Image (cartoon, rainbow, N blue to C red; front, top):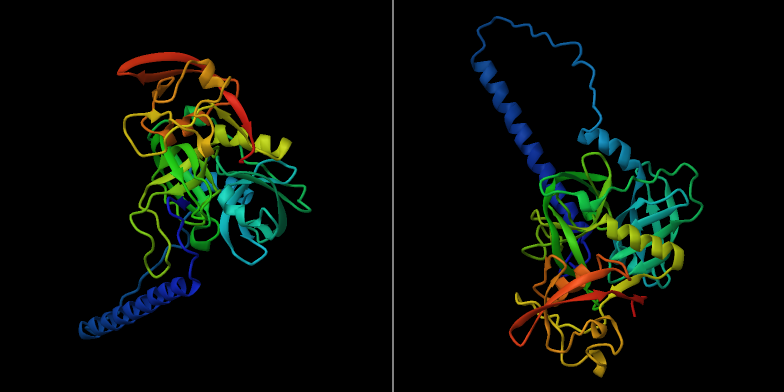
Length: 382
């Protein structure tokens, strides 16, 4: 997942050193245990003998539908490990999943961003089959992208999309991805929270991505980005996208790791974005037509006194203007969602579609007011 500060590219030698150290330790422990066991047996040998019989079979292993193993067996063949690199060779590894039978793969924007303007892009399935791919469309703000396999096979099986609105805190989750390049890794957990406001960045200096995320404690690490978050029935309920980490690095890798705070884009939002990208190649964002402060606060989203680049803070004739909002107003709720900052407001707006009607609660001059607002639209990331 993309941490709030994107970690540095992984160091393969550092990870290899860790693996070697673990192996050496295991060999040493095994040698000591074997030697100790032999010594104890020899000292206690009374000259007799003992015959030990082992069972001929452990019985048939049956994995009932609904078990993690059964869900993974069905979903894993429809996930891919994505390798993206720019024309200069810079890039990384992420994950994606089959969206339709035409060869479209859904992933994160930050997974494929390096390959958007030329470069190399490939997707490898768990059976080892590798396909070259191209970017169909990407939405930096949503952090969603769609790629398409070149010469896609005819037997693709799209994953079933669930309903993220129906997800409840405590529901079981299964994450599939390639943490630190370890393809086809499966982890489990629960939904820890819903509607969690998250602003993440890929560290490239580009604008942040905003989401009203599903939070999970399933282990998510760099390389899991773009992979599916599944429910107990194997339905995709989110796209694993970001992690919170206490530090950047550890074990010589220079990358942040999981502390049980992972965040996924709800699939209802991601599905809408993916369909727009496939049909038009560009994302469509809902908007209120006003500039808000991005400072971290707990008081609400304040409409700024001046817009970006000297523009009007409230678009003349736009949705906010028609709803009666003015510079200095502090938005505290969107429908029943509490708004504590500008990024939270943006994330909540983007869970809606252009044309949706919402109720805005705001404060002006110390008094609370409400107004109805019809969301406008903006095409593209510019």
